[in-house]
Image (tube, rainbow, N blue to C red; front, side, top):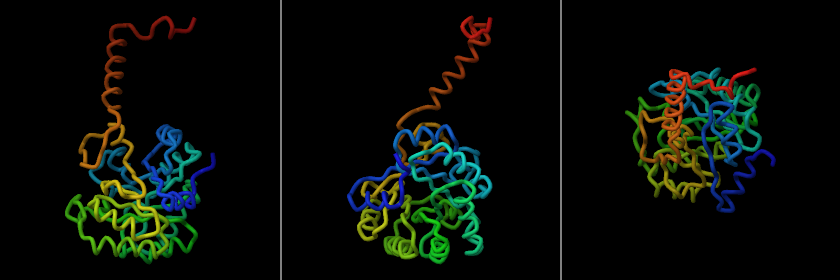
Length: 262
């Protein structure tokens, strides 16, 4: 089965078939996501929170993003891989944005990049796209702007969101993430633009959905947004296994004869 392409994603929107997307940050989990048949893998700067344990995504560097993305690309065979542009990798200048976007394709093997912002980053999207680097846009709640937004809040300004969506499409983005947007607004955006919309906390009418893998699997519980659905509780399973290992070692039950060389 060949790797998913932008053409495949566009056809899914045209045919009314939903697109699936999840985050992954390392080889083992990326391999599982790929084996599950997920269409797209986002190597998100959310790794700063769920992997590095930071309060937000702002400290994540380009070197860290390239490092994690390269592992994900190596593990996947079929999913379309998107590298997330971290804070200050594209804001200072268009030239720096193009250079850093190019690093994802050249050094990690990703198929595209994602950056946050709507009309304000239109020229940046145009510049990256002009270098033949596919761009996924991200509007609504943009975590890199957490301080400017005054926290993680649902975005309800329909006119601004519609303008942002149209701007990123016109700039050349092949898709756009809608985060923490009321369902009715997300539905209207999805109907009015020609590129696929990928929702996270944006209702069922988007062309596709994305979740953070650690949230879906129950591996992160510092905070649980309203839009999260946990499909497993792996942290509980893992903790029970670790506690059993500790107990068996302390009692001299592990390693047993079957684990010992003769």
